Amino acid sequence: MPGRGGLTDHPAWSAVAGAATGAVIALALGLGGLLPSAGGASPADGAGGGAAPATTVTGADAVDGFLAAWRAHLMASWSVDEIDQRTTAKGAVVRFEVHQAQNPPDSIEIGNGTVSARRGATEVACGPAPSGTGLTCRSAPSPLTWSQSVDRQLALLRTDLSGPAPYYRVTGTPDGCWSLTLAVPPSAAPVAIGLGSTYCLDPATLALRSSRVQRAGAVDVVSVTDAHAPATAADLALPANVTTG
Image 1 (cartoon, helix red, strand yellow):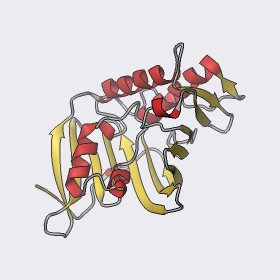
Image 2: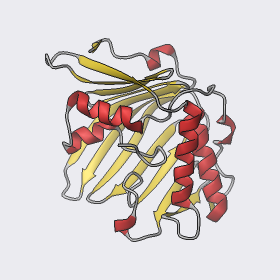
Image 3: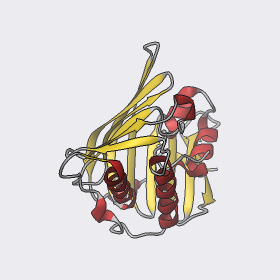
């Protein structure tokens, strides 16, 4: 189930939603295109476009600024630890820790019992082992290089944000935050980006600093507790309790 433009849920959210369990979640989401990108460019490529706007920007300038910042984010080497929280309209709260790191063409995301990773041109996805102890991993070749995947994600985002009838209007603020405000009826909104969202990027690491996505019946908030750049081998390592099945 590929997402639009890379602005997608973590695999762990689907586990919370109960759509599937264990390795099936990781395989469906990790190998389906939900990793940040897909292999082949150097970490430095495209990293110069992530600066926050000097003043608040709107319109075409905001769209171009956000796409440049998001490209820089996807192409950079960084590591973050974060808290992901979903609050439903009925007041239920689900909260868990997530670790993400990337150093193109490698990446990893660990959260809520699943692992999605990238090793060169290979996608790796792990879920709870049938024995109930540790994680079992599967792998598959990536269909795209890292650069190709980033280009595809940015092209999809541009269609959502520009043109005569965009789904969202973009505003960029000097603190490095980009807000996407719904410009169409809620029923027409792309599911991945939701009914409106804000993404704040750290200009020092080019990693996500925080995000808030309004969905139908829930709000997803990501708060980064630690970030550094570049990512190290330890940041990108698979958990010790994984086996290849």
